[in-house]
Every structure is written in structure tokens, then in C-alpha cells.
Length: 217
Image (spheres, one colour):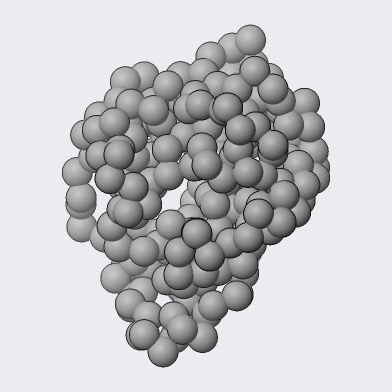
């Protein structure tokens, strides 16, 4: 149990569970089965759209992606594109007691977890974003962090963190600097396009964050 942030009883029992594990893909729930894949036309129409943050009070970790994919924008679910390793890494690191489907993102705030993005505009690839968009997105993310006051902000992508917060030499892991007084942890981008980090390595990085977030001050 974390003394500074007090998530629900379920969060304390789940997020605080020690040890990483290799995620197993179980039978999805009825809500997950009801979610169909967006068509190519739907995804094309999703370009430039935004999706709502997943947030709540007393967050242990606010995860920030770079920006939504067209797949995520079309479904309204973060990290929804097949091949994205965010949800398996979250489970493998012990943040959740089972592998969640992206359509179950609404369960995260009860576990002390939230999701947002540095840049809100959906694109097919992150390299379509301009430097100015990252800077503007960093300022907006700072405002969001100041309002939500999570115990940690986790930015998923070191290149995005460098661009958004003028930290050209930043590396993975806990940062010396804070954002709005909140400690920052930089994690690898879980996109399937990031070949530098396979799932076991992602789980190791996520586990280090979980251990820090659930350790009393």
C-alpha cells in the first residue's frame, strides 16, 4: 500500500502485488468480444481526431503515449492497434491481475492508473507530428499533470519526451527533473514498430516503474 496515494482496495491488492510475470492471453470478456476491428475507411476518417483521457483522482501512474494511432482514434481506445504491447506489458509488470483488452480501459482508474497523450491528434505514424506539436503537447501535458497530481508521470517514448520537454539527452528510466512537481519516468514506446524492445524487455522497464510507484516514501 502506498502511503501518499491511496487507490481503492482493489488497486492496493492488484498494483501492489510484487514480481513481474509473463502475460497469458485468456478468453476475452463479453465487452471485448463485442468490439470489432475498424475498417480502412473508418481509420482514414479518424485522422486528426482525438480520444478522451482515462483518468481519475489519486493516480499512482499517469501513462502518456506519444499520440493516438488511427486505429485507436477509430475505436476510442488507447493502445488499441493489434501488435501494440502496452496492455501485455502492463499485465506482465503486475499493474493488472489479468490481461486487459483496450476496450476495458475504463477499469484503470480504480487501479490507480490513467492514460493520456503528449499530442492529441491521431496520425498513422508518430513521425507525422511536427516539432511544434510536441512542444505544445508538452505544455498541455504539464497542465494536465498539475491538475491530476499522479504519483508518477510515465512518458512512453524517449524521443517524444526529449522533443516535448527540451531534454535532448534524456534516457530511459526515472528522470532527475520533475513536471509540475511530479516525478517522471520514461518508458520505451510499446508500439509493435519499436523493434528495439521486445515484450520481456518492456515488462522489465514497466516493473521498475511499478516498484517505484508502490514503494512508500
